[in-house]
Amino acid sequence: MSTTTLAQHVRVLAEPGDRHDEILTPAALDLVGRLAAEFGECREGLLKERRRQAIRLAAGSPLEFPVVTSAVRDDPGWRVAPPAPGLADRRVEITGPPDRRTAVNALNSGASVWMADFEDATAPAWDNVIGGQLTLLDAIERRVDFTTADGTAHRLGDRDQPATIVVRPRGWHLDEEHLEYGGRPVPAALVDFGLYFFHCAQRQIDAGHGPYFSLPKLENRYEARLWHDIFVSAQELLGIPRGTIRATVLIETITAAFEMEEILHELREHSAGLTAGRWDYLFSLIKTFGHRTDFLLPDRAEVTMTAPFMRACTELLVRTCHKRGAHAIGAMAAQMPAEDPAANEAVLAAVRRDKEHEAEAGFDGSWVAHPGLVRVCRDVFDNVLGDRPHQLDRTRDDVEVTPADLLSVRRVGGPPTPGGVRTNIAVALGYFDAWLRGQGAVAIDGLMEDAATAEIARVQIWQWLRHRVIDRETVLRILDEEVAALTAVRPWAPVEEARAVFERTTLAGELPLFFTPDAYSRHLVRRAEAQA
Ligand SMILES: CC(=O)SCCNC(=O)CCNC(=O)[C@H](O)C(C)(C)COP(=O)(O)OP(=O)(O)OC[C@H]1O[C@@H](n2cnc3c(N)ncnc32)[C@H](O)[C@@H]1OP(=O)(O)O
Ligand SMILES: O=CC(=O)O
Ligand SMILES: [Mg+2]
Image (cartoon, rainbow, N blue to C red; front, side, top):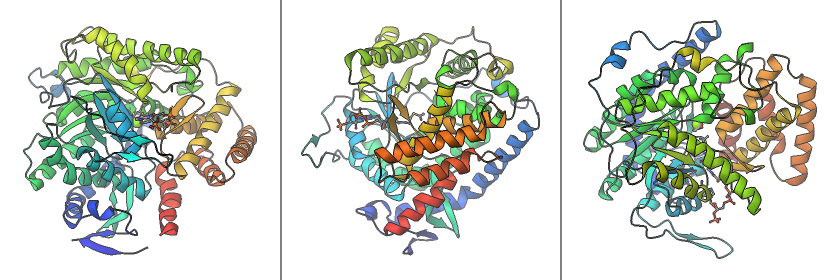
């Protein structure tokens, strides 16, 4: 591994890759270094607080709407910033990793927004991280066209209103081990945010939009405050007017669901609303309360958005957002378009039902995972919104949600089935295999799988083992069978490494909080070294 000092205090611990020098300029690294210097310690403190809160909740502390912030919730006098250019109408948001193919297809898809994702949909190998920044830069400069090896041209179309780009940096829990500041890895969130902000903020403003972000996996208002402080500092450092940035926060942890209004309040100068992060939300519920038998969840397929505890979260999200003039964006439906026309009709019908529930509940738009689903989502929201860009006027004063509504999961579904157990093992293994090969989102058996859905698969197996709903021998036997099946299909793939990730993160007595940090350090960073 080569060591280059490109900017004060920030060291690049990777071999130079193709065009990496366009992103890793001294000035860009200097911004990242300044952000690491100013905010690294605060982020460390917040990660420690996450662990303390997890221990308190495991020990039986009740989860409540915070008493100390009741004044914020009761104060009718504040609103978030008005929608920024390109963010007023968000009826369809397509998500995907920031690679060139996805970029071209997402920007051409007819969606209102492309959420370019460094978190759930990206395996954070160094080439993906820097390649993603190059994709974004090229997309904004309209030079992202390319031709595949078989001669197929991918060209950015000439839409009147191209999709607005929103970037999702990695979560607070991840480090970027190829950049070092003060002898420590730089927080990955600061790398993704800082590099994009440095290269693209002004370009986006010049193009009539702005530097927009989607913030994943926040657990409380303090983490939102940290983002606010980072935004203020970054805007000041680059001379960009305060309030230009906009950020939509994912409500995808159970603790954040109790602080939605506080999160909007912390970010109000820069807030663009909240998104329902359905899959990480389920993961968070199981992770936080997996030790309790009243939180035993059935097969993943049975836990739909109409489950009362999910409904409580989404209705509270709409009510909270609209009370404060903020957009409420719906969740990801995981179904993928099918080639068979009848099967595809069933997929479209399922996605349509999902989106109809959301549009009726008051959401202003929703997420899709594939260009083939843009149309159905748009039709559903067109029916409800008509010519209006959103339905912020639907204040949902009828919604009242108690802590018990958010936390009562017991009544949902039956016990896990043998099919559900096998599916979770196969999905976790298949996803880890793809992730280790650098692919952060993948279709498995007609469903989109990404880091969030793989986490559910993993923690459900952990939860079922812990409560002896299934036994270790059965899991190991199925794991062997699935490893053999996957190896037969992909003999060249790192299936044994994927098995090791599964075993380390699923079979441990103490549940690792995320599968990614350890798997990243062991496999993705080393692999970059080996390739160098
Ligand atoms: C829980 C959450 O956080 S959700 C958000 C995070 N997850 C995601 O963003 C996943 C988004 N979806 C995807 O990445 C992809 O749909 C996958 C990986 C699941 C499946 O992709 P593929 O196997 O390529 O699907 P498929 O073969 O049907 O694709 C057909 C075409 O659509 C494109 N496409 C598929 N999904 C997308 C997408 N989300 N955005 C843009 N283009 C897409 C493909 O690139 C392909 O293009 P091509 O014809 O030019 O080669
Ligand atoms: O990020 C979205 C989710 O569902 O998780
Ligand atoms: Mg998520």
